[in-house]
Image (tube, rainbow, N blue to C red):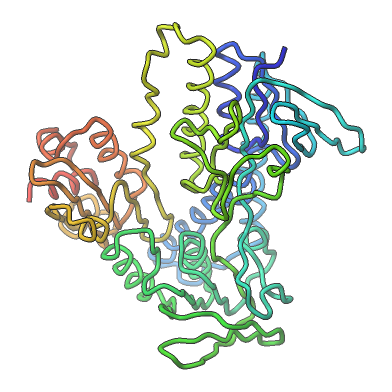
Length: 457
């Protein structure tokens, strides 16, 4: 008997499958492409490989080796080897007792029966009381002339370039756009960014985003914010037309990176046939990640709640907890409350630019708009001994706290921001205050002292 079917073997899918199998559920997981999903194959991991290569290149240049050549083919080959190694690791996980991996394209026959079409055309059906949809997301394109012209690439193609352009135009100043802008600038490419919003990283604290833009401008990246891309023209050079401050302008480049975000992969399966409710943003779910159809859940990018791999994983755990507690309501290990409800209210996010950006909780603008009283506590990398020793004095820690000290949000710009943010996330998860950080001994010399300096200010 099959207890659970999971459609999609990205982080949310495969991590949940392992946890389900260990809990005793016979689990089918279906994947039509590569194990690991977008994150492993065309997102988080390969991008971070190039981020690391860019960081090493910058450090070597800073050390005085100004004529270091960039062998992009070699860097891509290294990236591919890392991805393959991790993909093999996921394949090993799929051999966990209780898991059956089925390769092919899934479709709903009914709410609890899934048909899988294999590569050879054969079809096999599976039925289970619980189904988790984890089909991820797809790249978005602007509806403008030339959006699919020759020379327009997405992040997937950008990760597999065998030669570097001299000039790159990036349309979109979100996370994807900023990471690639930072990477390619380190590799010597002239980069221009066209962003529709008034500031880059619209979901992040505006103060931090502005400071990042200033840092990237110092590295030679050009920005056009509050600018709407209107058309892309093929040729040598290519031309990107955009409207800024009411005036139609254009810039020339050799390659255009379309980085305007990703959308829920709703067309991967026939949701209408089984009556699952969804919007343009994604599949509608409740706090347990269950759709309007009992026993059918949706996790990760496909529900549109939070497009982060770690969020997908914990959403999967949340759905699994509900499945297990519903089937074994008296099991003491589950209790009455789903612990992942609270966990999913504190989700850190990071941008792997140089310098890095990380956040958890609310930006200052949201607190102000909601009329929530707060105080902003700040400290700077330039006053930290470890940061100075690393030649990484460009940065800021900003902690937003309620009058009683409860932490409402934290925002970091600087080296290892993606690591530092988790201290604040743990405190927030436990309902802690700035005093909990202030009264904790921090090692010296370390970057973590910047957090301590902020709460002591």
